[in-house]
Image (cartoon, rainbow, N blue to C red; front, side, top):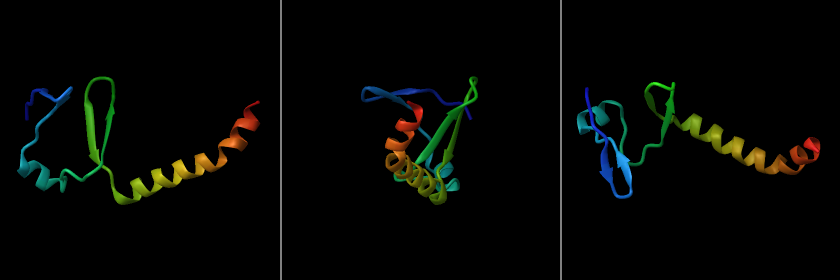
Length: 73
């Protein structure tokens, strides 16, 4: 599949066909993880457990921020 990047507001976008999105169970509410290997892009839907883990990690880091800062000094 070959796609072009198109203008979308002030940004850029890659338009994907609905059958592909349906196959991958992706819609406009799906969080996507985008990474690169330096050559190309990898796009994965974020599973609920991944999202829950990231939220828990963020909460934990916020709670531990004073301790982490104190230890770094």
